[in-house]
Length: 250
Image (cartoon, rainbow, N blue to C red; front, top):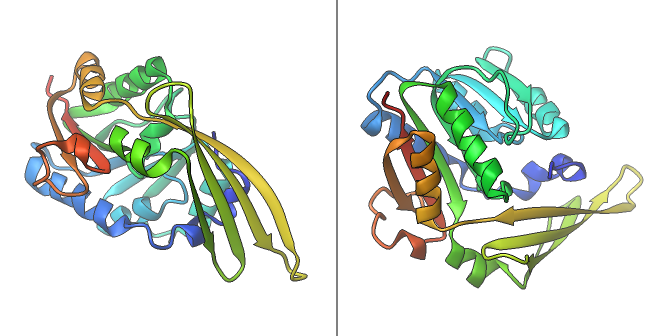
């Protein structure tokens, strides 16, 4: 599901998100694991473009793709026109005419929004087809353990100066599946609060399942690590956030 009303609040509510940690991981991948010079990067599920802009500032040519037009509008408004960024409105499960790239990224558990295995396989296939030879694909997902222990049947809340939210996380019918029921309160110009709700659906799979789909798409040299650290390669399923790095070598 696309973020709609939440788009206007997203950056305020995500102010403590470790975006710099994602950028550091991406930069380490480029410096230590790439067999080609990385110039072009496509950010799948870019949201409001925070990570996209941070990478563009470092001199890369970026394309940000997202299903939410509201998110992309906010991304464009926050972007310095001197940066080399293109924005595309597409569903990442139905990609078409995406540019060739040296690196593909999908951060902040975006891949968990692909809950159907066939759609996930097609997403990986699309990435593989559009990667240049020796290109890299990096993405992260919630671990099954993290979802079961820290999300399902839990309630979260936060308050800022002009907004608040209550977030219920319920289990789905399948392993690794969760339904997020979010209620937001946003202050308007008169000082009154508007209430609105959104429902988001996520699912995660085992490490071996993701690796199998990547192999089936043609990827190789697949590496898996946890929680933003390349040192965490043992028992990655015990981590909270699992990263996958895959290469294309025709």
